[in-house]
Image 1 (cartoon, helix red, strand yellow):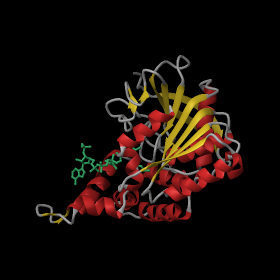
Image 2 (tube, helix red, strand yellow; image 1 turned 180 degrees about the horizontal axis):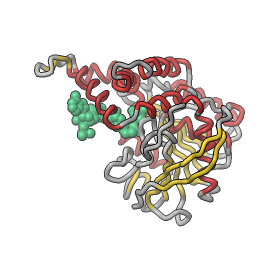
Image 3 (tube, helix red, strand yellow; image 1 turned 30 degrees about the vertical axis):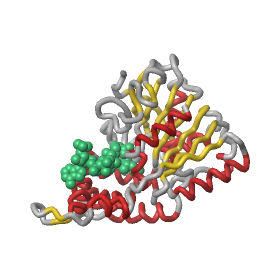
Length: 312
Ligand SMILES: CC(=O)SCCNC(=O)CCNC(=O)[C@H](O)C(C)(C)COP(=O)(O)OP(=O)(O)OC[C@H]1O[C@@H](n2cnc3c(N)ncnc32)[C@H](O)[C@@H]1OP(=O)(O)O
Ligand SMILES: N[C@@H](CCO)C(=O)O
């Protein structure tokens, strides 16, 4: 399996009219390019191009003999520029929109000479970027699987990202505090209450739920850059795919929601399904049942794997 980082360099003008030199990094897994069907996976908020293998963030889904089987497919994953995984960070993060990232990924595909994909899959923010990509190129892929995301950011998600922005722009442990707030949006009251049952950690003199939140704040602080988190939050806050264009998408579309997702509520994704269904036949809706909320797409692998196995 190939896991080294590769780079594509080009000039790009952002929607805000800034000329930037882009060094788009990516990883390939599985079969050699052009020898097998290509699946592009767009990573989620704090993910990266390392989707499979020992440290792969989606190794429960992608890899040898996994549902997205690298014995069968070429799996390609770009890093959202500025995510820091390739040591590249962006200070002026508000120069970029989700549409820019979609343009940059599409340009990357063109430079790699990839004219079409077998499947385009994205989770959360990665799914939002995938929506923007496919709206710009409706014939890009045969199968489109956006997971726990929608083609636009709705008000409640925008509001939570605004709180994230406030936390990220203050000086007292900005990344840790923002992550703690975000964890509450990725989960649900039931997820925490059922799991922790008000248990108290005598040694640490706090509730176990508090210790868990603090752990996740510190864990992200150790593995992630503040600048990258500001950018990802800004992108999540501004998914805004042109609704007229999504009706032109030619792919078979499989929308996957989580019934308890607070970020991208299942009813919003069902509304998108119903809108698309009025125009066409090959659109399908799947729902993960979980008490865990948005992060269920990183936890409920039995369900996710069954859904994706039946699609591919
Ligand atoms: C696309 C992407 O999301 S990128 C990468 C995947 N995402 C992340 O890593 C984001 C951060 N991680 C998470 O949100 C979660 O770990 C998930 C969604 C991957 C899994 O959630 P859960 O099943 O609830 O796992 P949980 O948060 O309890 O534990 C994860 C790890 O933290 C550790 N941990 C959790 N709470 C504590 C604590 N209070 N003290 C010490 N360690 C802790 C666990 O031991 C576990 O370690 P392990 O991975 O070495 O086994
Ligand atoms: N919890 C995941 C998904 C958020 O959408 C992450 O940190 O990337």
